[in-house]
Amino acid sequence: MAEITKLLGIAINDYDVGRLSHAQLLSILQEAINSGDILLPNNELYAVAAVIPLIDQGVLRPSQHTEEFESRMNAKAAALVAKLRGEKPPQ
Image 1 (cartoon, one colour):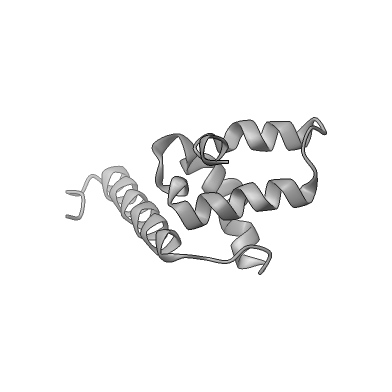
Image 2: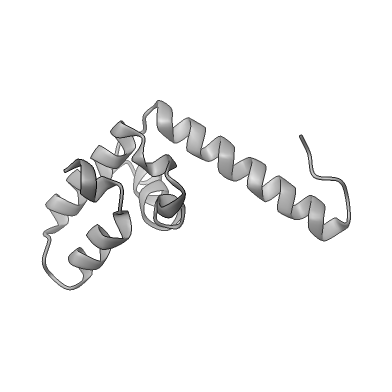
């Protein structure tokens, strides 16, 4: 399953077209959380759109990688806000 957790977009698309069950998709997403694959740049969008909401709902369990992911996203959001305000991005 390690390869599929590195490409969450494929797993989500496979679920959307019926090639994966809901339980299979949740298993893949949980493995991506546990292995740290949610931290991969190509998984950022899917982590924000699919993984984090399911963690917030209590469907998936967070891991130490979740905290790092949220920290990264917070830093990116702060940098974007600073840029939009014409300020120097936070370090």
